Image (cartoon, rainbow, N blue to C red; front, side, top):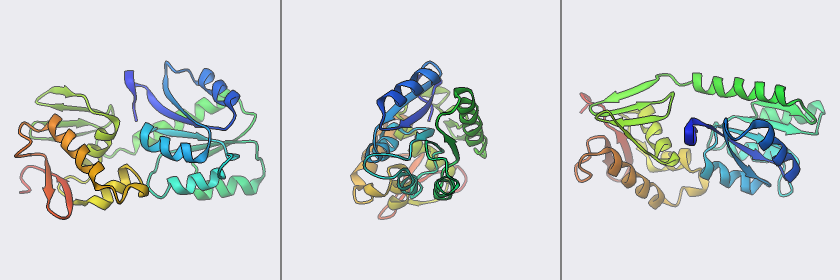
Length: 234
């Protein structure tokens, strides 16, 4: 997701601090918002909390193999993953790509090549957005720039709130179950924590609804889930 100052978020996953430091310096934090994780469990947690638009992943992690990290990510998210590994055997590359990695670079690599591949993948991810803008009544969502406005006034959302609204907008008019939403936004470990969804829905309504008691955009389907209302479909 786009971070502060319009920067795209990249999560660096590597157990070697020197590698993480090198990537931070090479990529430049003026252009990207960079997060770090030094093992697989931290990577999975950071993907939920940091909401990166791309993950740079080493395979040789201390607590689990990087391929397992990819497989677990793919259970609930399509975030692009570029593998950066010393493993140069064809079998290792095939396993990682079959698990869901988007690209594979063998260490050592040139930073120019890495940067070029990052740009290609980020551009491709952005181009997969079907419609650049969602408009209904006083609510406007600019998907390309991750901007939300109500009555023309910009609304500041947290990354999770934006992702939640984005998901509902992508399925506007359709009911999404609580389980579907929890799995898509927070991952399978949160399926038994519906209060997380309720809190974020409440916060989102506070920001985009003129009257939270009578919401016009995010509609609750009792016992099922939520849907984003589309005018004329009521």
